[in-house]
Image 1 (cartoon, rainbow, N blue to C red):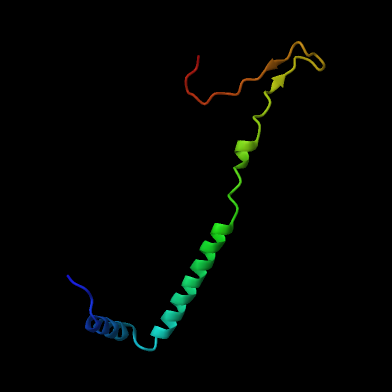
Image 2: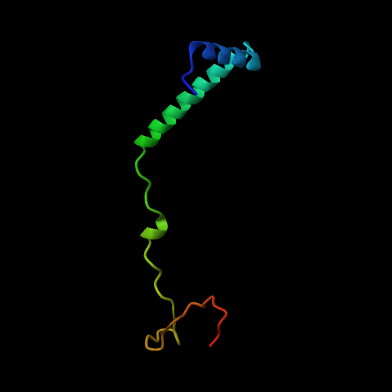
Length: 91
């Protein structure tokens, strides 16, 4: 295809001016510059942020097993409570 020469650049610029109008081009360029500055500042802030902390679920210890006591104060009659299983299979 070849390289783009100076005449091709002039033709492309003329088409852009005709499509967007000379009045809107400065506003568009300003908005583009502002967007690029925001993007640059956000990427810089992202690089300076400390790494994210691990999720709270990973740091918590598993809950203690539940027990049911036969009578108040009776330690020998306690038994662990099994959580209900979500399977549809019954024994």
